[in-house]
Length: 397
Image (cartoon, rainbow, N blue to C red; front, side, top):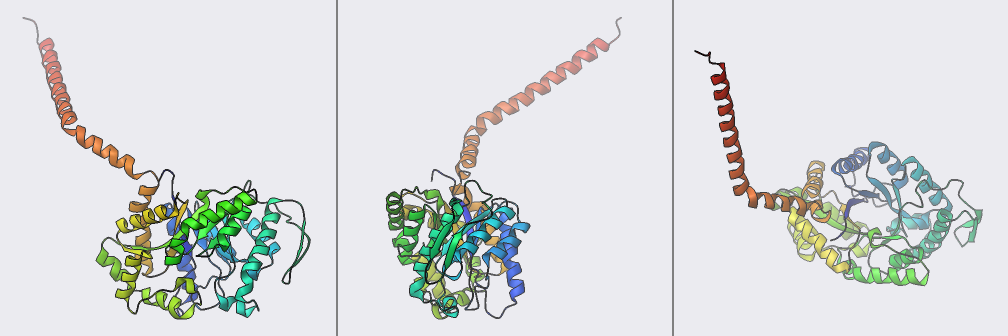
């Protein structure tokens, strides 16, 4: 890769139902603080309202707290389910966060992933994508124009709507649409010139669609007079790393079965269908299918290289789906190992130090000999100086 790949996480989050939610949310905040200290670039935070595991109802509120506990990491909504909200209020909230964070906020949008969320407010799954399209058009107008907008559909009625604050970021913070396998997300990204969050990049359907997604973005951007940038394309993958393969396998015994059960039997999200009846089968599926990497840093490197090749031109950021397969301590260790051993390969820091060490090793025999000779010469010189002073100090007869 010829550019600096950014690293981050996509935090739904996934917590076992029945555990202390206050503690779980604190663990999520502490994870983002940990990533900030390790030099990660981004953290995207989800919005969900049902099914018991993904317990952050407002990514904006969570980001507001996380921003006060961090210094550098950018914080994104991953994603705001636009079909649930009035687009004017979405735009108002994200602009306020842009000011509060001094430009560290990002807006990720999607239709809403959990049908059980939409059901409670009377929205059918067949409606969410059209609401997403309508809402994003309004939001992008509000964010990029000072002209008012009037818009009405069967859900919202906006009359001469406009923002009373302009964004802090100049010209605008990052905006990204979510995609799994269908062209819906890439289509909107190209139409509005936004980035893309490929959440299902390592699923079979998502992986196969990667190159197609970018083709769709470029075609739509051209048709609508927009420009798009691969550096704004973020791919999401699954990783857990430890010092050894055996340790990584032991780590994920903590929560892997619960995570798989959530997608197998609870969340009505067929794009994330995962097989496996026990931890051993689940690990085999993840590693053998390319769905993720459970093991050593080298395996994470290979996954990113595989995604880079499949993307047919590269992408800008690799986001790890935060999954709670391991306990908090092992999870923090995994992210530290990735920062220590994986990031340098994709950020231009691995080869320079390796090459420098190799050059020094090659020159060591010659330079060590010269160094030893220099020390020997200095010793001889000093001995001569001492002898000369002693001679001069002797009384004349």
